[in-house]
Length: 416
Image 1 (cartoon, rainbow, N blue to C red):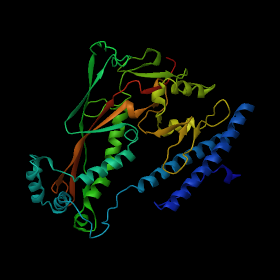
Image 2 (cartoon, rainbow, N blue to C red):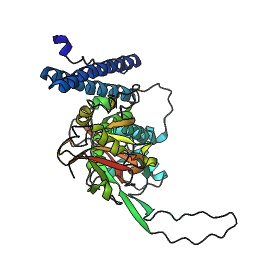
Image 3 (cartoon, rainbow, N blue to C red):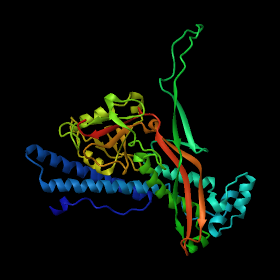
Image 4 (spheres, helix red, strand yellow):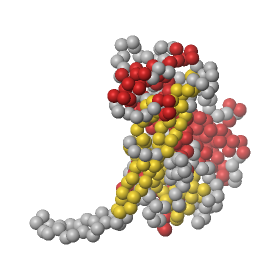
């Protein structure tokens, strides 16, 4: 009896493909155990009230599912993580990459200065550091897409200026039907407005030992990208959700929110659950369906759910009117769980459920949210501030904000 109440064991696994397959098999077995236990809990509620032991068992298995899903995601990320060791001595490296490595290892910036002069760059190494090689910048961008939940589903645009300005027609484009040889009537002059997406500085400062810098086997620019990627992903992930736009991107939850029936441009529409701090007790799937169809058809086909782990755990226990679980596990390692037929993105920066909160978002974030990256990741070597360690002050400029206010809807826990 005691064994039946225990949550499934979470095994530590490596990045080997066989381990990934085994971990996914364990995850699916845990989900089946979760369904059996939750069915028992629901049956007890229908008879009288759920047994405390059963409720605790369901909660333990649900937590185990979360941990196993996180382990699966980490395994999938390991497959695209850069290898810090060199793949071979015959690898051809660009001139910039070789010069950058000399600067990182021993502070010799002569070759980088020469390249800056050749490229007519006026940046000063002493003042702002040097740009990382293009290969390293591409690797950081690739890993950020995998690590940052909102970036992975949003549109990403690179710019060379500090601000991206995007014009749009307030009344929409003027269109009409005409015959092949008929005269084209003059259209009304469109009224244009402008969205602005300034880029803000994001920084991280990894430290290295002299032993690491002297190890010729270690590829140092790959080391820098692996050190800063998590810090960058955590900071920008929080900003894309709830940033206030002051020295950081503006998150989609920071815009003015209105009931969907009163939606207007530059505001984010929401549906209400009808219960102050949770989903409805009766037919909770109905409000999720209402949220889905609050989006126009053109947005729904590429839509995603966005919520944090705690909200996902509460929804995982729910069934639709036909008795089917609304939450379904990923179909394969590296894929996303599904909720009512749409992918579910886990973003820990989404708020927990509570009175008048919006813990669930649904929308086509590719059309709705824009991430702006200013080209160039800059590194400044600092061997003085934390002796005997060498610090690498690494900066990139990122902006973000909503570009299509029709493409994102929220689900609000409340009555109005």
